[in-house]
Amino acid sequence: MRLMITFRDVDKDNFQAAISLEVHENQKCFMEDNLFSIAECAFEKDFRTKVVYSDGEPIGFLLYYFVKDDPDYVFLHRYMIDKDQQGKGLGRAALEASMDLFKEEYPSIGCVELMHYPDNKIGAAMYESLGFVPTGENRESEPCRCELGTKKSGPLCRNRQTQVLCSTLSLINRRTVKS
Image (cartoon, rainbow, N blue to C red; front, side, top):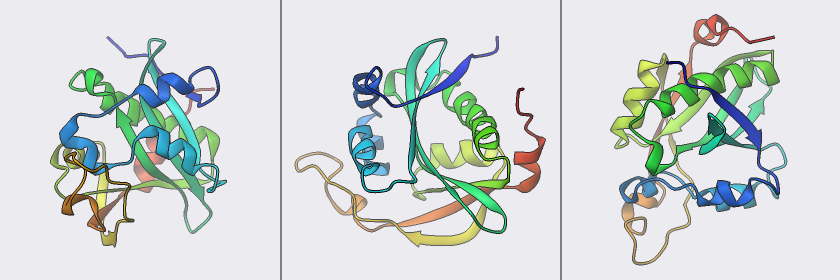
């Protein structure tokens, strides 16, 4: 059975659904919540946000932007699947579908880049199984908004090293964009 994954810009009609999507408690140290990401777009004008849908139901969220470079690429800044939708193959399907979305929106891209924390073993395994390869570059993460009294507060959340992964040129080009 093929999953029907679609994307919609965050707007007034799906805003509440977007900010209601959450990851598991033990995953909160890996990314900001969707409300913070949407607010960040007020200051980062190149950021794009999408709600991820499976068969018409909101299941996840993307925050990304285009980078003009050699080669041009999309940086997938934040990617999440709701905690109640994890473990069903939707994360993999949505990430694969996002590659098509990026290629359709930005035909000149040669790759998609993302970062992850080394202790995000599940995410790392999925990214690498989809053809993302480590670039060998590590970057310091930005300090994130930590909530006192949660697992998100503490040393795991502050200025940690992240590993950079990039899809290869052949990966993005072998994906076919639907006309």
